[in-house]
Amino acid sequence: MTPKILIIGSTGKLGIKLLNFCHSKNINIFGITCFNNYRLLLQQSKKYKINHFFKLSDHNENLNFKLFLKKNKFDIIYFLDYGYKSLLYINIFLKYNQKSHIAIANKEMIIAGGDTLIDKIFKTNNKLIPLDSEHFSLIENNITNEKIKKIYITASGGPFYFKKTINLNSVKLSKVLDHPKWKMGINNSIDSSNFINKILEIFELSIIYKIDLHKIDFLISREAYVHSLVINNNNIININCFDNDMIYTLANPLFIFYPSLIFKTKTTFFKTEMLKLQKFNDKRFKIYKYLSTLKDLTPDNQIRFMVLNNIAQKKYLSEEIRYNEIINFIMKNLNISSKPMKFRTLSDRLKFIDSINLNYD
Image 1 (cartoon, rainbow, N blue to C red):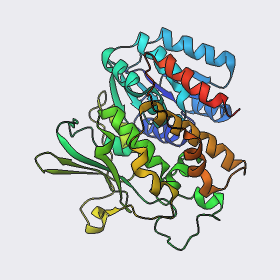
Image 2 (tube, rainbow, N blue to C red):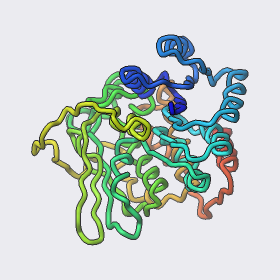
Image 3 (spheres, rainbow, N blue to C red):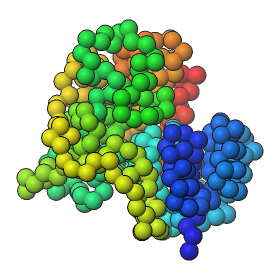
């Protein structure tokens, strides 16, 4: 049986990579979406012979896409887009689909959905496959909060960590976006350069695997070969590694339906330098002084942090604030609440996020 595969965010870096891979393996895609890049979406639909395609920034097409979600049963749905609003789509999807594989690279969506989203995926008999390399690297470890002492995810260092003479108060946007290991969109590139992405990924890991935030930290892996390290209660340490190529995570859901898929790895043997790790200790990055504070954030404050980061990025890109003021803006406006909010539904979470954004319109 040919699986029905839907890709939300096919025109981004990951979507393009996944479509190229599927085409090379003669894997058919049932539906694709973009937010605004309709020209590329149309090219993809013609090149890969995809009959169902939707531009989600268009009101009528958005309505048609929601109807499309209701009318079809999918075997794999990919969320390769950016931003929390995809909670709207997964909320519809979970009402009409069971025993599906939900592959998510959208960390904002997971943080916004929190345990409400994870529990709903489980209760509807669907399976979550996290696609961020760090979280994906942990899926074979069968981790639980009770079994582990510590989990470290890794950061490659981005464009600045290993260039100690650079003054982060005066870097240009072109340098911020010039990641040495990964090709990403603008938002993810900014987050990677100032290590905010590691905070978001720590939140994400805590949500997906239900791990105490205080048990999660990050290390620097310049080669981006080690993606996570787990210290178990019995003192056994698991080091999870693979080449820094997102096709490994993107292709994983496909192996369920195409078990004979084969593609070559780049690294054929271990080299000492590939496994080197170091502690993050560079005080040039403003995130450094807030690491312990951020691990105390409740779920609603994690959402506030994420939304304020999105707002700060827009201000930076419009030159309202400087690059090294992004984290200052977030922490100044975070207003950490003493009484955690409780969310019963995904709709409650979306309303909460809209209320935060409303204050900055």
